[in-house]
Length: 321
Image (cartoon, rainbow, N blue to C red):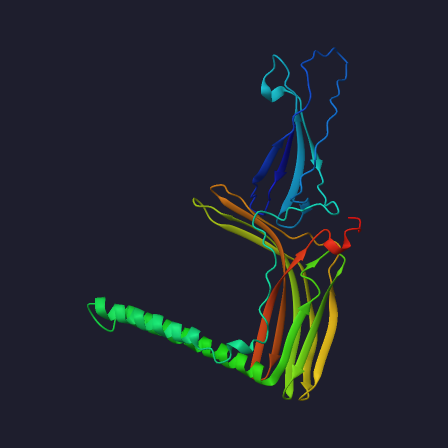
């Protein structure tokens, strides 16, 4: 008896097996009489994932295949049967989120006074650019040549954007004592709420143009083939935007706190990301991200957060799945 999981099926008919597990049955060779029914009871432990899922570009399906070895018959006429299984999460049981899955990382602070006055990145860029131009002058037969202008333009652009980032961060530090966006958790169950909190402590008067939170979930299936075209298909499975502030003035010395939540629909799939190890690299992924965006005159900042949709939470293990 064989368990098989079909990894993904996209619009380009991408189909890859992820694993095959064989179950040993206690069975003795026997002879059946006409009309006789022979039963072999068995049981097995369901895998921890990937969980069954039917989407737009990809499906995760599990099957239980059975075959009977009948004496004096060829293999293609031997009795076979296949039963589709539905693998669901069990409360408290470890869930397989895929071989490529990574835990959510701790986001960088929106306001970082330590980086104000730090020109190390700009100096490093100038040193690398100067070194590359120097090597080019030393080895080139003619000067200035094409590579000189390429190194020079790249160096100027990198320094330009680093300066923009520096002055943007300096403006935020000069205006605010605190600028924080906090999530209650980066893991949430379908049908639950993803809570958040915005804290703004202004040193000086701040005219905020807009503060938004954008949540998006995507399913994606792709194939990287060495001998043919590469394919990628994705579909938005959920998106939601909330405006926290718009054209709002915060007086100097005041504290603004805003709390709210985003409702995760009960039908969205769980987070999953896996990649095959075969010659043709196939990848399937269901992922969610939340974007926080802060706009005001003369300053801007944004931050991305990985959100995992999971079947159960450690602090809420009593919920039936």
